[in-house]
Image (tube, rainbow, N blue to C red; front, side):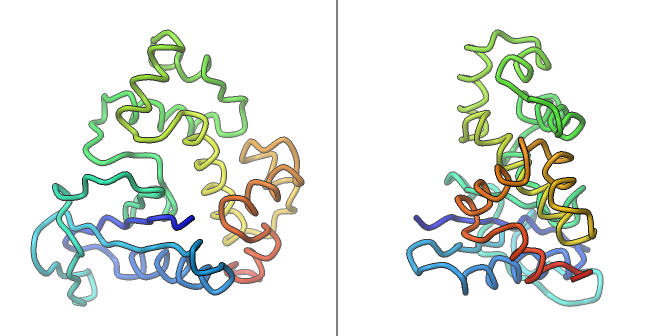
Length: 201
């Protein structure tokens, strides 16, 4: 099934923070059947052409206010990680989604159960699941798994850490579990991902 990936851009953004992630997904499409391809969209924080820090001009596919559909992955160019799906559109710093984002980032190799996340925002598990799914357009479990995958991708690209170390630091049960999740979500193994995209490969 096709996945939709959106990159949010703003005036002064570094062009590499936009083109880098888009190139990764475009390259990944080479290894996927057509119906599983990633569809890429650029969302602008402002309307019209926006200048990058190097002078390159970018035109987004749509303005942020018009990005109302549910995206499988939302990247904020130049954010904490160039692969960061943690924040849903319009999430305020005090929102449930943003608070959970901060908690997940700080406890990535923990269990991160529904009870853990609900406790982090002082809600009952049932209320938390309902509110979070409504605001983020994704279930808490999917959100956590997506966060683990994105953190692992960053480590695979930028370090030579053994796969079992990457798996542990990103909260997977073991390297085999990480491999299974990568295959299901990205259609590629962690080892192949590192070979294709790792800067230190």
